[in-house]
Length: 333
Image (cartoon, rainbow, N blue to C red; front, side, top):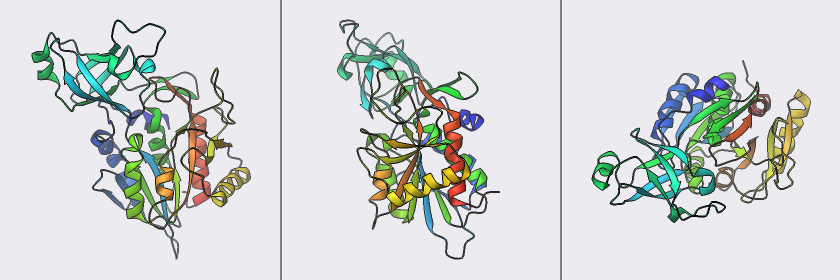
């Protein structure tokens, strides 16, 4: 799992709408594991592994490729860049952090000097300094519309816990790659969908789900935890297993599917916990409401400090999500 995750953390960012870099990496990884690999008009990567059953269902597994970031919308005379947010940015967490552009240019995101130290800066009070002396020099290196993100990294804290970014949602992508490696002879047709633009409204998954026409779907994304200092009460902890989503602010998962997943986990001795998230949402909602509707659920990876530069996960939870999926769908080697 850790080696797969490392391969999915390239230096170039893949901000929503600009997922080409990570899509190329995933395409190379998934092509030997599937029968068909294609990219749709939205940019979703859709990989099909045909089922061996007599009457295979269409099953969609989904994780999003995109990450939150910034879009250059103005270059000042002094060479500083003003940027617009792409996705849910917490500027307090992003301030004084190194960023990287698609073309390799680096800079730092900083708040204006008059922002009080105890306050979280607002978007309009932050800028990016790429070390340019003036607008002319800055414009030679970046242009209006260029995207950047916090510099990706991954640090192993101990045998199981890692910290870095963008683990939202490269860990979900890594889980799907590992499932594809193990699920070599599935009964059902398995569509592995690596979606685009989740961070700006779950857009890619909507069109992909319509094209696939899935009868059953599972989504892999991060979720919050109740074990951070000062966190809201929540029955999800790092290291307690895959989080079987029951509800978040955008979806109520198929109750029969939730029961089936929990029963499989219990029968197979796979660590699992129940997730009820009182905020946020994932691609699950878009998939559930696609076409004539779809039985949809999610296996979430508990994460601390989501949308910061130090997202933290426990690899045991990710491995549990892989094991539970393979046990539920069958067809493992």
